[in-house]
Length: 363
Image (tube, rainbow, N blue to C red; front, top):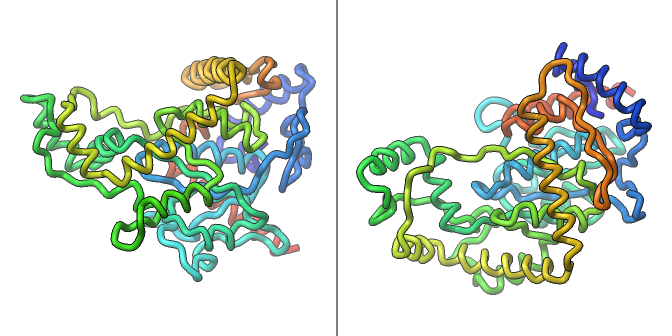
């Protein structure tokens, strides 16, 4: 399933490996057989083509770490090439602003190979995205309701969080007359008020992005994305990453909420546009979509329970076949990857990408 994974996972992985092989033999499935998946595309039982070239704009504090984890595990599962910074130390996981020299700052691929997935921190640059990923990549982003994103951003900042928690001890309405700032969400899209009309910019983003997910409707967005990409439940399962639990115990008054919306009026307009677009798409899918969504949530519950309590030597979890999914396997190593934060997962991918390049360069 994943190259050299058991070396990274140690004895725990070796034990789980035996359990996984046993389970697969019994079930009669060979999902992870080397060479089974075409590196550029594959077809599921409905004969649609699985999209494997994806450029994801990782928008800060919008649930993007969870989505990035999904994409990076997808790359590992199907042995795809990932765009990664070729550096270590401070902010080793960030590419940031992209330019004509970006190709010199990323881990190279072997001759004859191409990049498939971009899911690390960048600022949006359509031209560079298309230079890095060939064959018309699927452009994906995620956006969050600006008030909730603003609150999440403030609590994520350790210094600000400490001040807010102190204020909460005497008054839950901590955002009343609060002057602390956060960067606009649209900055990640490379939008600056002085340079562009919001209406024209929103229209352009609507054309350039194949899909912009909405954080508040994450599972609904995922099911729609699954259909667009011709993926499976196995490809989109997740355990929420980077969720901030420090921001409990506060309240937001209607006045404070409106003040925050005014502060981020461009973000709010952009958000409403793409939320409305998502709703229109979902409304056309009928009851079948709701049934699929319900089944997916049941699968997520099974995965979460298994991964939360899995122990060394436990057998792999078998997700049974349903109307909406083929039977598939979740093993302890998959749980390990799903629960990794961004930094160690990127580090694993960097080591893997270096190894792949080194091995192919010797041929």
